[in-house]
Structure formats: C-alpha cells, structure tokens
Amino acid sequence: MNKLLLDTNIYIDFLRRGAYSETISNIYAYETPGIYFSSVVIQELLIGALGKEGRKTVETLYQPFESMGRIVTPTHNNWKEAGNLLSLLRKRHKNLKTKIPALINDTLIALSAKSIGATVYTSNVVDFQTIREFSTFSLVVLENEA
Image (cartoon, helix red, strand yellow):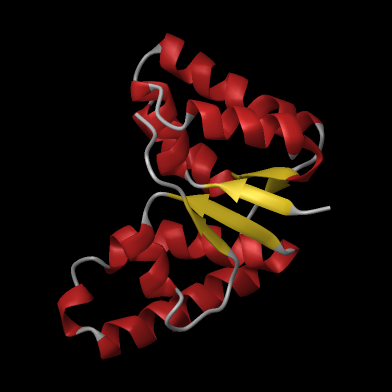
C-alpha cells in the first residue's frame, strides 16, 4: 500500500478556490487506506481558520485521520534532522537566510513523511526541491487544476 501525505497548500487551494478537486477526489477514492495527515499541516490550516466555521471545516478534514490513528507528527529526530538540513541550506544558499523560518514546516512535513515511507503531494515545488538538496524523500508536484 502506498502512503501519501498532502501538503498544506493543496488543502488551502482546495478550500479557497476548489483547486485540485478532481485530484483530491481521485486520491481519496483510490488511495484512502494510504492517506496520512500531518500534524504540521493541521497547525498551518488552523492558523488560517480565523472563525468558528473555518475551524469546523479544518476539523472536518483532519478529524477522521485522528480517529483512525493516521496523524504523522515530527519526532525528536525529525526536528534535529530539520535543524541540520536547514543549516546546510543556509550555508549553501546565503540568500535563504530570511526564508529559513518559512522552510521549517515544509522540512518537518518532508522528514516526517519520509520517516513513515510516505510520498508528499504539493504544489510548492521550489521549497520542496530545495529541501531535497540534502534529503531524499518521495515527492509528487501537482499542477493547479483551477
């Protein structure tokens, strides 16, 4: 069984504009047993859910995965590896210094997905390809359907 994890930007684009609706429908129809939800993605979605209705929508997305025990949370080792990886990126790309804070969550998503053998699905090709300079993980880049 393939394991997969959708990045935050896929859910956000879906919720805001209906983007990826066909892709998400197909993933949920054919890959349901292998779908995992990242606690980092939950955090990012909740940050953007400013009202009660928004929080309820986000809860609807992740709650079934909580019930089934399919939440992926970065481990202590994932955090350490993220720190080392981001340090290497900062040394290689001096211009990334101010972008490092924004890469933290994506790095944690990638490393925690890797730790369970899951593929990350994202539309954020730049950040995840940058992370791949120092870590190998399975990645599928989706193009926006909307």
